[in-house]
Image (cartoon, rainbow over all chains, first blue to last red; front, side, top):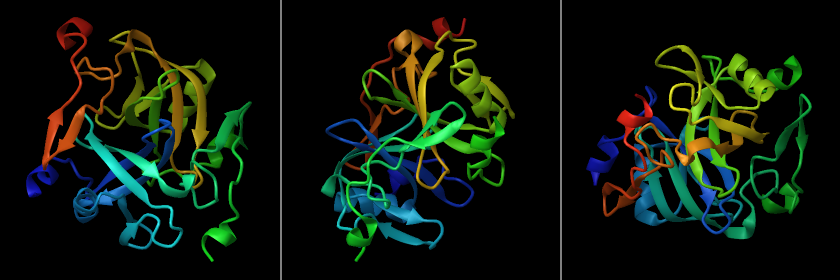
Length: 127
Length: 127
């Protein structure tokens, strides 16, 4: 199993950026980071498991929210330093703010303006 | 103009990851990095301008290949540390290998296997 991990150009911290894209809609949901263990576990378990840099621990996406990302496929880029995950987003919410995607701040006339609704109150998601 | 740049959580190197997504098809084309100057110039000029970490210089995507990315819109994520560019990819080729997207190595049974065709010989692109 280690071969495909050895081909990756990890950062000096042993990480790689991982972009999650909705398999059905094509929407880009979020970007987070993976280390060797999290990428290996992701393909083994068929769900997105990131590495939380702030907590310095594995982050099984959806473990508290239920918003698991079921892994459909994984692609590596030409430089071997970014992975793209195609996922089924359970609950249709990827963002901890209760929005569908984390990319909800649109650049308009020199400002970032929210352009996506909160689908569920985060207090309900994480209660 | 500086306000929207000040809201970004830049890395210690002054960079932010930038994901480019095809505005028409939703395909994720590539991920590269931007610094303050490159993001400001991107929105001013309406095209993707990255910062090349290897060359330590601005990288006006398409300047040698012609494969300019016309910027349709930009979104910032919830943590203010990743931007998503919606682009019109001129020439329909984003990757320096001559493929449409940089994410052409698919994880299959413990290996990365190419799953997208080379649309144009890189020697022709960069001649």
